[in-house]
Image (tube, rainbow, N blue to C red):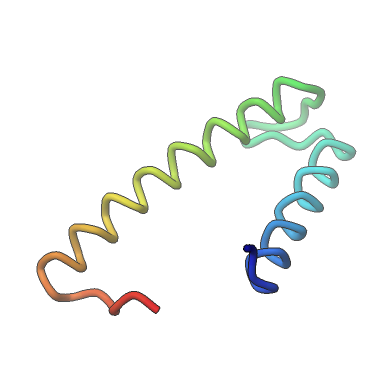
Amino acid sequence: MSTTRSQLYRFARDLGNVESFEHGYRRAGLSGGAEGEVERQARRVIYRAGNRQINTFVRAIGLGPRRR
């Protein structure tokens, strides 16, 4: 079951995807279309995996916050 907070974050992310697709913005400059969306998805997957590993390590050495 999804919480209200996660639903809001998901909505904001989807809205950002739509806006960036409409405007055609990419990291390196102006472009658009499907390749920009694919790049954003790939970048998000990489960031999520990296952040998860970093957070796990920080918690393991006792420096991070406890899980909710």
